Image (cartoon, rainbow, N blue to C red; front, side, top):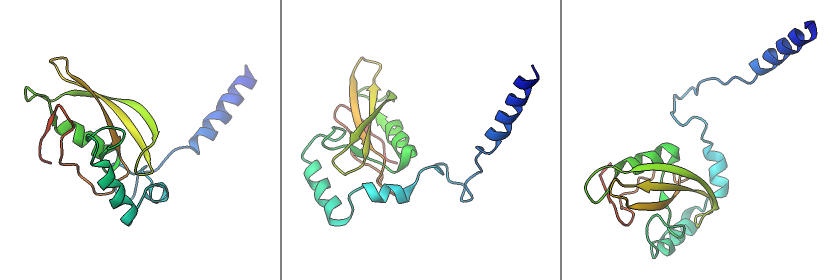
Length: 144
């Protein structure tokens, strides 16, 4: 019994060192590491060329993912989508899909309308300050 108490105490003290502190800048996405992103994402002329090539494919496809800034940008975009009847769809992240056409990891989302229409939308959250204005096929999108 005494050994169990000692082990529990040591574990609690050890876990105390794992706590985090708030981001001094107060960012909602404080855990998002932009320096890491810049090492994996296309930039400059290479990025512009990839965007032109991607635009030949439907927005939201693996070949032309919706570009967003951070996880909050992905949510903002999905919350602005509207189904054919004008209502907001439900959406759920289905997971990471691996490296995309812009050189960064892309995420998949399942988007469902009340009338039964479903779409899989691919998103790339590593585009600093970008706000997507276009709508994925089958939806409209509200202005930001």
